[in-house]
Amino acid sequence: MTYDVIVIGAGPGGYVAAIKAAKEGLKTAIIEKEKIGGTCLNWGCIPTKTYYRNAELLKDIKSADEFGITIPEFSFSLEKTFQRKEEVVEKLTTGIRQLIAGNKIDLFEGAASFKDKNTILVKTEGNEEVLTGKNIIIATGSKTNTPPIKGIEHPEVLDSKSILELKELPEDLLIIGGGVIGIEFAGIFNYFGTKVQVLEYMPEILIHEDREVIKRFLPLLKKQGVTVNTSLKVTEVIKTESGFVVKGLNKKEQEVEFTASVLLNAAGRVAATDGLELDKAGVELDRSTVKVDKNYQTNVEGIFAIGDVNGKIQLAHAASHQGIVVAEYIKNPDMDIHESLIPSCTFTFPEISSIGLTEEQVKEKGIEYKTNKFLFMANGKALAKGEKDGFVKIITDSDNKIIGVHILGPHASDLIHEAAVAMSKNMGVDDIAKIVHAHPTLAEAFDEAVLGITGKAIHQI
Image (cartoon, rainbow, N blue to C red; front, side, top):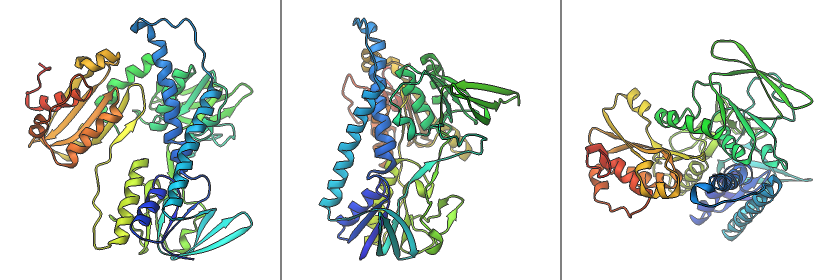
């Protein structure tokens, strides 16, 4: 069977690339060895955000008295939460199957490997298919990183996939890793009622975010009940009858110990290339990731790599975007793919979102800049919602063009898209000033933060 495009992996990068290729009139096949939807829909973005919604409801219930509502008693079931998560995932993955079929894409469910640069073998139960493709897109995503820590490979150590299989709520949870995965699970399980501790090797958590945001977020996390230990090098994991003992060294090189009934390894993710036999196609790796050029093409013409597997940015929507532009490039190879601004969202309490440069990056690059913040406590909608913590931070260059936006606060994951539109159109302060923002809305905080760059904000001294 010969195709114009063969896509390996049916996650948010792969299935979007396949659909786009089919819509471009290219004969397309897609291969998936586990579940349609990949990590994002089955064990990542969607399941965790489903759990996040449960945690958000529990947070509101616990603060109901502030709104004059008395809830004398309530209960929480992790098993029912699990069941709801399964239903949401099933609906979405079924929908993707329908999209694949509706776009006349051939679906092969099995493990793919290269025979040569144009030939893919697909091993299914008791069968092997041979596919030939003019173009091949590798979209196999990523897998849990297992750091070199003695004992961490114990089968009862959870990862971001297996923690979503729990049916009973643990009394306490110890998380190795203070990145997005670790901090999101920390917030979720904390509001579920679990005692949570986080161990982070770096001096800061969420190291890719603007430091001013994290400086303000940490006290909020502590107030919620989550304990964070930074500059902590984990050296050993020991399984005990009651759970785990984790040994480590603090920043003073002193040995410390932590105990918990449940342990989560959230020490990042690495490219998933196992079993692909990339060497048979001559595809080069950059450490563990697939090496690509500006067009997401590998060193082998006609073979591309998108999403987590190329190591550029580990976000589902980045993978989808790369899938779309690669499909367009295959259809029209005379075009060049240009990097697009990618917003980032972390579902904490409150949410964190960002796009563009952090203040630290601006300083490193030697860019002349201005910055301004507008606090949500001065926003009417935020106060009415009882969600006054956080701020919108704007960074502009010397010409007052927006080069970075960082939000800590209610619905930050939604608000960041106003910044994405503004920055993608190279808008500046004067452009934003001409846009009327409805009242009362959280979006007014973005407006005021931008106007404050030139001292034109109305609700800011």
